Image (cartoon, rainbow, N blue to C red):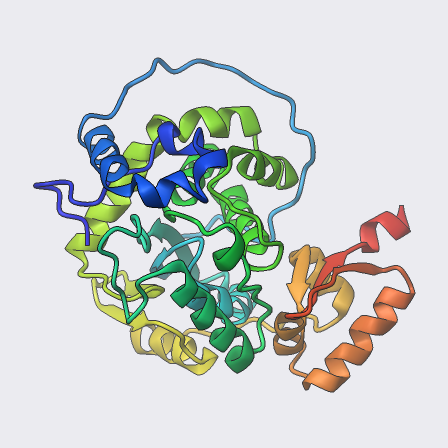
Length: 346
């Protein structure tokens, strides 16, 4: 992990964003020199004066998180990464946790720095972009969450640092919308084959969730890098070796950590160990309610949240689609369904 003494992992700054058209060819050829340059940028970051630029929001998307005024009894440090496939397949569990225990838990998102660069990279046997493609295909087949592996064969990301920094820039504006932003860029990379180190996609994602896109692009070149660096230092201090890692803690300082993919029961068990009298909230299983909470859902997520089998869930989703209450992003690797209830009602 990151070492604060020698800054071993370089932060990818605006220099990398500006090389979008060269990533396929020149990155591999010049990766040694590029890594040295990026390490220098990380060790000696540029500081820019802040300003009060305000740009009208293009779109506004409500946050699915329901804020409460009372202090919550369980805190969760969630170490994740925008391109982490295990984090993606854990989305159904996290969303149900949010619906059933939102009154009791506060989840704080931290970036874990999954892919600094491909130079000397070797994590769980993955050494090259083609290795990621094979891994994603296996994950998609095993967990039934749609994942398009072809991004790693056609336009591979050289690092997960730029979208991680962009998430920290989103957090500087609004923590709830930052979660929506993270979801949106994940949809882009896992389903739409979008290379999310590119500013055009980060800008679009920011607009999609109601963030100030111009401010986000400015902050990711300055303040957000420092916030990302803080996450990497904390990850190192917590000895985070697997993503995702969720560290649950109560007001007495007791901690429990869950690493990697986890069945939902393990989340619930961890909370009961920290707070034995914790109770869940029953939530409506109607499609309308769920699509109001989550603007997009995969078939697996919808099935998991309504506690129905795949065939029954597909029947419900197709019926809603025929009625134009939802739309869908079609993929050979699985569909994503998009809320259209509000548009029909208005």
